[in-house]
Length: 150
Image 1: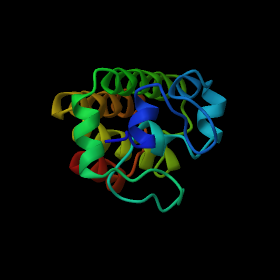
Image 2 (image 1 turned 135 degrees about the horizontal axis):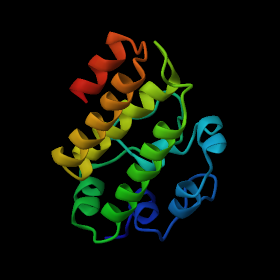
Image 3 (image 1 turned 135 degrees about the vertical axis):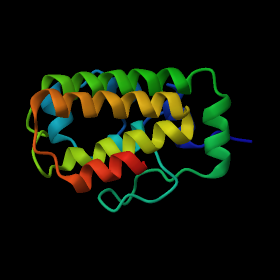
Image 4 (image 1 turned 45 degrees about the vertical axis):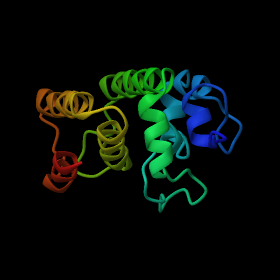
């Protein structure tokens, strides 16, 4: 069976639709992460199409299994998680009632739960909630609800 583009991307052997590797994305600076809207679907894929980025990957059951048993994909997911945690620690613009980053956070939690496991998803969720609480940010109950059910 030939590996699909999303599996190859997460294993560091392929590129996204714009020709970026997982390493290119993880090394983006905070300004680029904030301004670029078509990387998160590759770094944290889901089995549903993205409404925002129509040509983003959609996981199949075979992709999910291949990523779960891969030696390299979980490393990329961990590096992506660390990078996004650093972004959310360093930036403040998302700490408001509603922001596009709230959808990204939901995606990250769901993708981690699906591809890596509950512990990793719960840890990222806890990190985000701790950041919100520490800053007393007015993040909406709706966003918090999405994160809790992701």
